[in-house]
Image 1: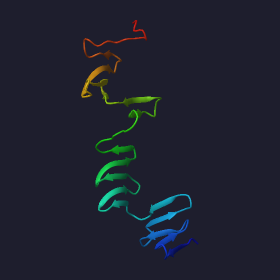
Image 2: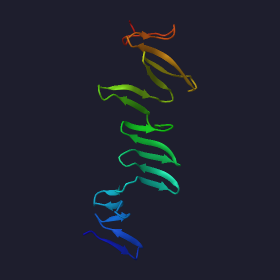
Image 3: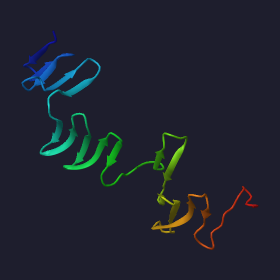
Image 4: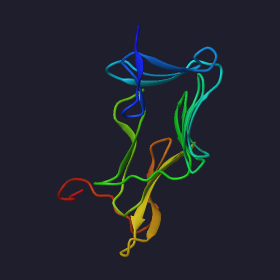
Length: 171
């Protein structure tokens, strides 16, 4: 026995805690508040769409993806294996970072930390390479800095590259 009432003075239909507004023949869509949290619940056979004017903003697929849109263009989608981002991902504030974690081992497998420079870690069947750098004006001038093959051989790609060990660079 939950209550809802019309408040003529404020022109408001008020649903008290746990009272549900149901839509559709079998209450396929419900909107309610349980006293602590608010819910929009899709109980029917279709998907839930949240629109802004004529544009899709959010699509919630039954037993599937949730999709986010900007100006009717999909930007983010959840998948059983994670998240797919369409177009660009922009990180703002402090020192932007992206960390790729392999949950089967400890630590980060790839780490990108950029402050007006660019870093690329690229892998292939033969090994992986690290590419980085920017010129004095901040223009992208990314070049390969080193390569490690599957047998562990480390290659420095230019004759003037140096490999230094120790704080005093004595080796």
